Image (cartoon, rainbow over all chains, first blue to last red; front, side, top):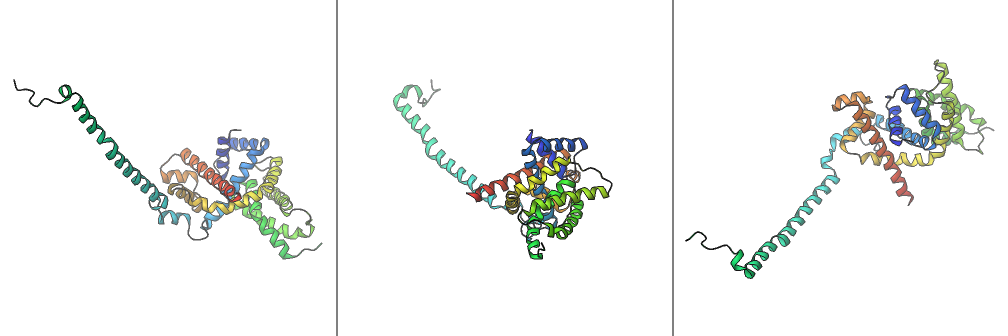
Length: 131
Length: 172
């Protein structure tokens, strides 16, 4: 059974957007497969409930319609967004601290060690072009 | 045996949601579902005296709903539904079998809607609150019909998976 195809066909049934051929195809799925019937029943029951609740604006206990919720509370202002922003800030802060404490001192320590070990080869000449 | 109205009301209210969904699955249209559901409700009350209370109410009511849907189609010169008669009977069985799960999903659905993103909730609002067709949504959102159709499938699947997860979480 092609589950993705089945769900597309059930969607077509719910949205009145499927052709006679697709209706026959869905019928065939429902005839042969108990799993298809189960999925159909779950999605149709959900669709019916959505239709009745949202048409009456009672999806969230009659508080407000879904559209009003969308307008009143855009996702830029959800707690999830704030948590994500806080996580990005903390990670940036941590990365900055690590960079400052670990990466920066290493080249300085290396160059100092190199100068001590091989002063003649790697230390820059003080007056390179005086001759 | 005569049965009283409170007993009927208790059983009838419990059976309402699965009956409505079953009738919708047979007819595929909400306006037709409402019409047939009203007829089924009247017949259930009229026939309640014949109901064998040692058996479950829902399968009995589903049988009446199926007969009423067939009569309704016949009265409107629609000899056949979109489903094979055998599938219509199998779906009645599935609705009865899954009713406990479906009842839990119905309770969880509102919370799952809250978990959708803004764009998805906007699409649900267009589809269900304003009863827009997919073509109208595609025009408003300036997207292709195919893209809107696929998004609606994804939204419905998300909600179905979400309600299933909430049921599982509640069970543990």
